[in-house]
Length: 264
Image (cartoon, rainbow, N blue to C red; front, side, top):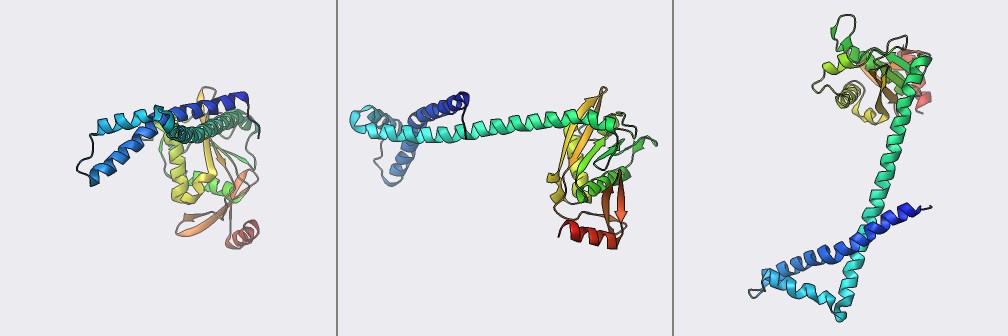
């Protein structure tokens, strides 16, 4: 693994800072613990400030140099560990941000290409465009589509887009949420998955947003599920599978045969 000069300098700063922390913070804190232990078992324990003043200055004497070095090393090790953690966190955050941006730029292109075996358009999450009111039944439609992608090879479900690939936006859906923002929209998607398909499947979806033509569009990225995914309908477990540019319901025999092959 190679390290750039910037990364080495970044970690070195944490090591130096940690060394100072070891001498100026860790050492005094350790002395406070020692004083507390002494005061518990001795009635003649010195005052805390007097104890600290007497002991802290000892690290400046040559014969106590080993104590100063010890706390410097302890602090440097702590600083090194925190520096590596911070660097890795920053790298992961940058990679995640880059991935989100890449996924977001994919949305307009998918809208132009139209629906396929890996892409589906839905006008809304829960707002009935024809009846002009909330329709909770539409959440079942979303769950059915996600189940089809889960059971197949994954895919992309775009919400706020009509069948012609034109952006309709998410304003109507957002207005139905307690908190009318995109974070609440994403949480609602996860709730639909958890309630209809199983909470263990939530890590296999990821929702991103893009503004297309001045209107927000959501894209749910679905990864293949590690198990067969069923929906409960009329007290029966139903198996859906993405086939072509539609989601098809399999009968019992087809579902069993497919599941045995897919998750053998």
